[in-house]
Image (cartoon, rainbow, N blue to C red; front, side):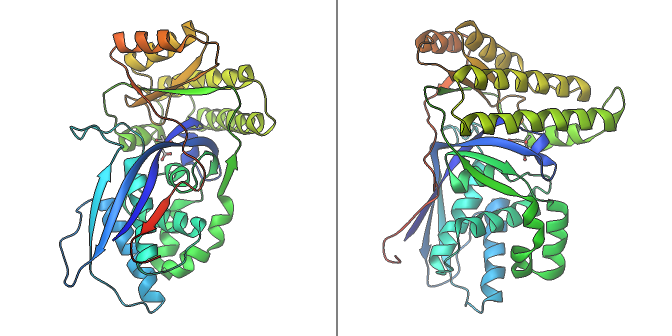
Length: 345
Ligand code: MEV
């Protein structure tokens, strides 16, 4: 049996803007994992109906065929720490994690010897068959772990290139040059708190609404202003981590990023920061921390950056009183995707 595990993710800065090719974001991988267990079988078995798993299997099958590797039969079992017991999602990127872990398990099965960047590329090629707008930031965090700086490639062009020229050519395409994945140093003396609001959100619907024409003003000017402001914030957050800047500097960027998402939501007539996410942020602010929604918002999780002297127990108590569940998780280490095999490696 081969087991591959991939961590969940959280956006720190740059959500929504990162959907545009080349726009930067900062994410973290979290130490909750999705596990894929793959066992070879003598005959074909019915596999997971998850479109992400199927797309991952199909993309690797295409690569194997191109390399002249004979297909094998296998069964796949999935166990996720990224969902509640009752199946509700935490918004920690379980679709990305299942894609990354499935590709890692198949890499081990077929001994493809893929690099982490090649696994990421395959995961993105698979994902955009199911969710064409997805930025792939979650796949980068899930593959590389730690604090991650990310810029997406042009997925419309990649998908077209894949369809026209096949997976080998798509993996080698120059289109990846617009993409960037870089590990960032973790901040010293800053802890991350994650609160879950209990209500799930549809990332795809929210991203579609953001891409649609805004209700007011000039669409292009608003879009450009949002992208340029978001880019400055993501770049300055990455620079602050790389230069070991103070917690206060990081806090300012988190607060500015929260304000920017507020404006985006107003312009597009959508709700990113729900009432519960607002409460999560106000409570954290009351105790000297800085907080914002993470990812698409509309429910799911919020994050707070806290200093050691902030009263964490009081933040968590107040969160609980407002129906916010503290998810006790930390940043996953780098080289986050773990692959183990009992009899293969
Ligand atoms: C969702 O977690 C984050 C978005 O930026 C969408 C994406 O990056 O694919 C809203």
